[in-house]
Amino acid sequence: MSERIAKFIARSGVCSRRAAEELILQKRITVNGETVVSPAFNVDGSERILLDGEKLPTVETTRLWLYYKPIGLVTTHKDPAGRPTVFDNLPTGLPRVISVGRLDLNSEGLLLLTNNGELSRMLELPKNGWSRRYKVKVHGRISQNKLDSLTGGVTIDGISYGPIKISLDESAAGTNSWLTVTLQEGKNREIRRLMQYVGLDVARLIRLSYGPFQLGGLQKGEVREVPQKVLKEQLGANFKL
Image (spheres, one colour):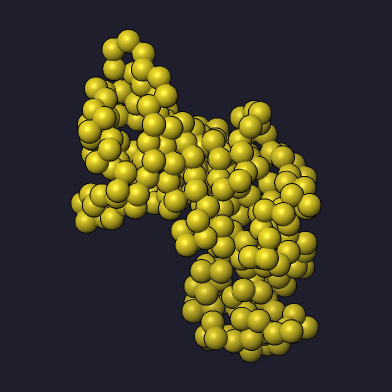
């Protein structure tokens, strides 16, 4: 059965489908000795497919891991600034993996990792309705009216942010508070920008869950694989493993 070459590359775990399309446009992919110039190219896996002259990894069973990302790591395979990355600090024994979305340098908590770029893309799409839940420590005077103004969505500096859910968990003396924030999309630094918009500074940001997958008792830097049975149950008919 044939499929688009970008999807095939993503399933090999090299990169996401979008990144695979970029590789094709950069003319870095060859099939049976011929350079592929368009993502609208189908393969069935029997071909000799090379990236920069090297054979792609064998397409393996789709796997998913839960990882507690510590503060101080960037979610990228290579950082131009030379900062430590998530992928440089994973436990030994894992295959090549890519992340499902990102957590910025100063955020921590649950990061999903997979060996299938197509699964990563599917889980990131807002239309699939997988919410992300965060525990957020903020500094500043809490205004319930201001928090409520964010729940229906807001535009900041020309960027539109969708509806979110915010609940005030506890309030310490003074200006330190903990919030639980749930959102569907997770744009770059979204929570930090939203909190700043209502006059609050984020002191700590921890992702607790991504869709049905929970941080639970994971310790910082720990990785735990999702059993295949659980993965199939959660993905249902939306994704063929």
